[in-house]
Length: 248
Image (cartoon, rainbow, N blue to C red; front, side):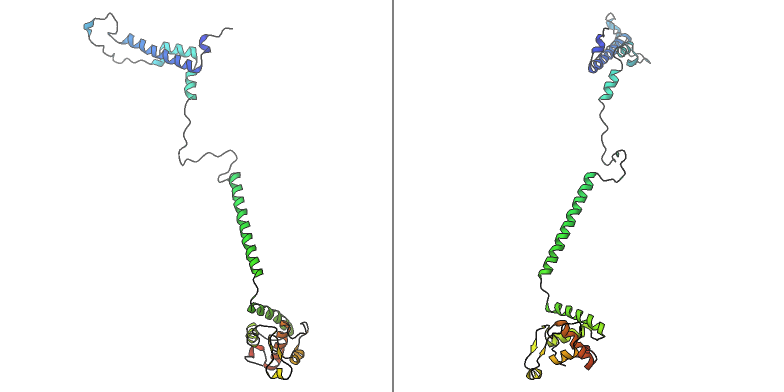
């Protein structure tokens, strides 16, 4: 089967052929319809005038139709293939992919968010651990130690029904010993008698032994045992350690 020469042309060549055929048709029409265009026309006829009401449709000209019949509609397809894509207007919402919901984050965004969250959490843990380490290294003050001993002593006193507020006990401790459980008075009358006052609330040994409360160490310099015994004595003699404002 033989392939005609026109069918072997490329799309570009066929488009060019269509254009040339159309131009030739226009030229032929112009030569045929314009008066005075003939070579034998008299020179004195003057310039040709356009024919009123006469128009030419190049697309309908026989030469144009013949060119299209030979080449097919390739010229139109070629023109369509070269149309530029519609530019994206600034601010115009982009089309979502099938199955994607409005507001969905991409995997990369979620991964980045998770990474930042983990970093923040690790930083917070590091700060928390650093604070805890500094707190553990920092020794308690005397006042803090006294507060802890009073809290423990009052827990025992509550069970035994011994009165005494935190404030009332602490003010007497700070006056009597300055918060030192090993404090001892070796110059007063009791010391001269051989029974010096000892501990946080400066009790003498006979008083401590008499008012000692079971469940606490039987040791006069033990902070909790000294507080409980002294408060038990003050409750018996003054109604409560809160009522003691000087040496007792």
